[in-house]
Amino acid sequence: MVSTHPAGVQLSGRQYLPQTGNNNINISPNQEILPLTAKVNNQDHLEIGGCDVTTLVQQFGSPLYILDEETLRTACRQYRESFQRYYKGESQVLYASKAWSCLAVCAIAASEGLGIDVVSGGELYTALNAGVSPDKIYFHGNNKSREELILAIQSGCTIVVDNWYELRSLVEISGDKEELTPLSSPSSLSPSPVRIMLRLTPGIECHTHEYIRTGHLDSKFGFDPNDLDELFAFVSQQSVLNCVGLHAHIGSQIFERQPHQDLAAVMVQWMSKAAGYGLTVTELNVGGGLGIKYTESDDPPSIEEWVKPICEVIQQACAAENLPLPKLLCEPGRSLIATACVTAYTIGSSKVIPGIRTYIAVDGGMSDNPRPITYQSVYRTVVANRMSASLTQTATIAGKHCESGDILIKDAQLPKTESGDILVVMATGAYNYSMASNYNRLPKSAAVVVANGEANLILQRETYQDLVRQDCLPERLKKNEG
Ligand code: LLP
Image (cartoon, rainbow, N blue to C red; front, top):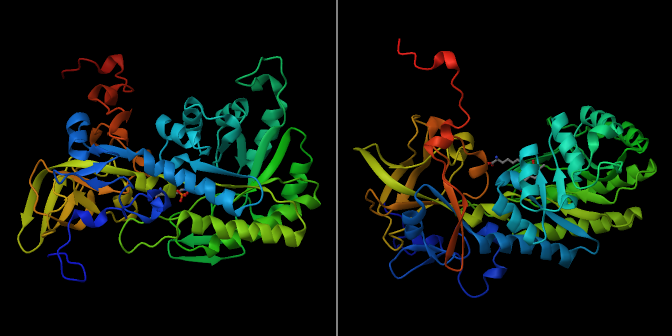
């Protein structure tokens, strides 16, 4: 099947290049499929961040995650600048590091003034090691362990409390000063009240293209809003806790703007209720969730279009309730980082089943991108060394795992390909590396960050030695040759 655009001209990989011009800064990264710096060079190769993708693969091997620094920084700036433009109060954008947690990504986000949202001791440790200031780290999670809570308190980050069990555990742990030597202070200092926010379930449920509002939501996360009175009364009595704010997150890959506006309005109502219990709530966090463009038919709002109405609703609702403006937080993951990254693979074997399907296999698959097999996610691809070639074949891109379902893209439109070609899957920055596994004992892929023609390793490729590093072979199982 030949892919054509409406004028009947055959398409090529070039169709995915971002709108060009010198004003990349005005393009919302989540509305593009390739990173903002993507170009085709005079060898007809895809170039990102001034680096030829085929050269990157020669240098660093494949599969290779290629992170474009400019795209990530642009998205960070657009979030920050939109809040500065439309919100009269203080604001703080957090990067939801579950989308991709590693030192370099946290460091880039932090250098753009973003804080970091973490959901485990491991993500917290990563953010701290990246040099992120604890007062800009917010720790989520519906079942934080005692060890995680202690690490969080010692680090000085803000804990987003999810449920009664956690709330009571925190009161108990915070009362035990012995356990709580702050990481950065002498042990003689007694800890100050633990800075917390409360996560509430708003009864707004989002799927990608629709949302519903219900009185009661079936979610494992957050306090039931029906418990608000009891919750605020309890928290206001706890001198070991300093409740600064309220949090909610309603879903991911959302294209509609109304759900977050409804959420903002509901949150101001909660804030007003808290005031009735003597709780001075100074921060509201509306979560993340803005969607991105994975395929031509995806049409998310821009970052600015998402931020603006949220700010307006909070301002109007606070004015109506006669409440001071809270510090407004949000915590996007996908819309900050997804488009900034592509994954480059080398094409190996292929299998033509006449009249049925052509499979083209690459050297990675569900271990480096588990989203297609997990969520039936759809991706687009280009062949990095044949960017202008017409798309003359329909083929299914298979991974190398021993599992029939290990398909990265069904019915991809491709130019004629050969083994050794470099196939690039686009928009892989969110929830790819962070959900990667060692299935079939494949070593995890390397990642580089590219900018101004320079590539730096940010994740080393795992080795076979890495794979057995944590294995233990009990003495009695050694040398058992039968
Ligand atoms: N805040 C909280 C509390 C969250 O649970 C999430 C995502 C975010 C922020 C960031 O949401 P985003 O802006 O990235 O939509 N693994 C799935 C996505 C799971 C999202 C989980 N929570 C995927 O690959 O599509």
